[in-house]
Length: 287
Image (cartoon, rainbow, N blue to C red; front, side, top):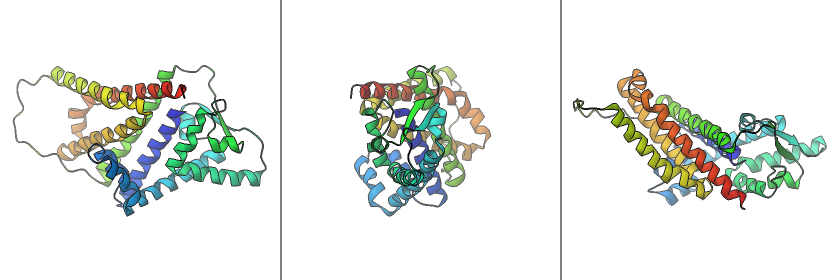
């Protein structure tokens, strides 16, 4: 269930950033993820103690409430459909009482902090994969539709791809069309004749492995919290650079300068995310 909750939250926070940018509201989430290493505590508190941070929280609540209301009423959600999970009613409840319980349920899940706390009780109610509220009122439970389950790593690799690329392409939209990034400065230097693509490729690979080990994989020991932050921050940097290159050299720059190493580079991050999720799952299994 870790992959389901994290996938949902990454998509919801990304959509919040997109909507905030469209309405010219300073993005508290992207600001925190971008500068978290040098300004962690103040950056995090700005989400809660500034007007623009409260606007972002309001947008996130409204988006989340719409999403979880649809999920409750239809029994379908983005992450559940992706991972072949079925939301079912554990017990029959009268329609009026059910609607009231679902309203409270959706409000709890729409505040991301209360949603996280509520979801931690899935560890306690593993048999039916229920959070505390659903278990207390005999509401929803989840089961796997596919009896032939894929390996744990393949499930997490699939989840990591969705998380990484969904955030990335939403950020590309933000920094290209809504809030364009600044063009890259021209150095005026002449390209060296000794340039070697494979040396360049090996340098990128080495840098990404280092990032995977020290940011994504080790982040799994913090129950994915550190990995989740790094997921957004590295994505922001990648999106800004790509958008800046596009503004500077035109759309053809993507094919010429980025595409040759884009998927090998980003897939390195996806593998790191997958291993972090596996680590988190193993650690949580001991709780």
